[in-house]
Image (cartoon, rainbow, N blue to C red; front, side, top):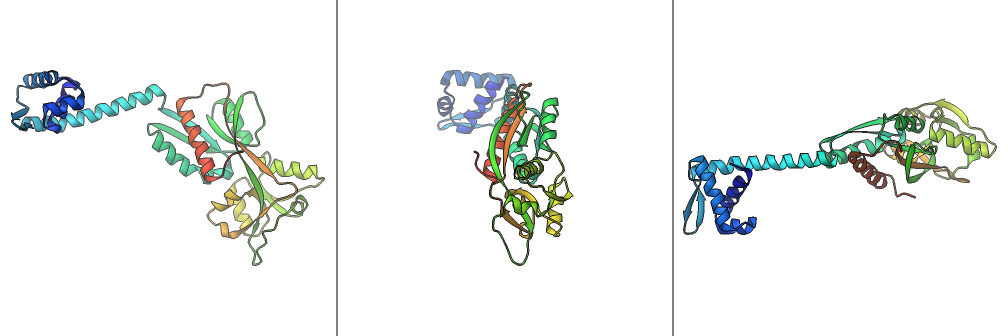
Length: 300
């Protein structure tokens, strides 16, 4: 008994005709009949009853049809799995996300990854861009999303988008969404991550270029903690508006644009230039690019 014989028998039994099965399988009818007959001889039982209208399965044939379908399904699954192995679609891939994007991307990215690559495993971690850049170079991460990343010969970067940073304040009775300038920001009590957070470094650099200094009230390295403190009226934050919108309580905040100049955070996708990129990594990178554009906005 071989798989081809089982496949031929299933099609004949399902279609009820050697002629129709011959056409469907693109196999000459005499060859098809011979293979089914060899199967009957090997099993020592008649599998099909021939009549004027075609064929019907005997009890033994019905049993073989049921089990044969299961066998062929498993064979197809095996072929698919082996194809994935050959294509490198098995294994583990580690991706790093900055804190401001973790809540936005983790669930939709994981769902898309599991749907596209069910045999592979994804590991998601959160970190500062500078820390994740080091993790890429030492092999602890395969892919990372970095803000304002420092160029390095050991890292290949692909720009994804630029995000505008906003001043985030607690919401008051009189809603004020008017723009603010760097001078306005210098007068605010800021709740901001510690160095070397990319947003912190950008704020300090821009203020310094204008001869201004930030008033750092509190340093907090988690987005949720930062926003909780802002909501309590303990200061203001500087974040992309998308981070506030997915916070779970966006109505607690007032988001004000920053002008003269705008503060733009450049987001890029990065991999190590020293190690080859696997098929799983390439699939993941395509998914990341799609999800970033769908959930945050278009690229540059």
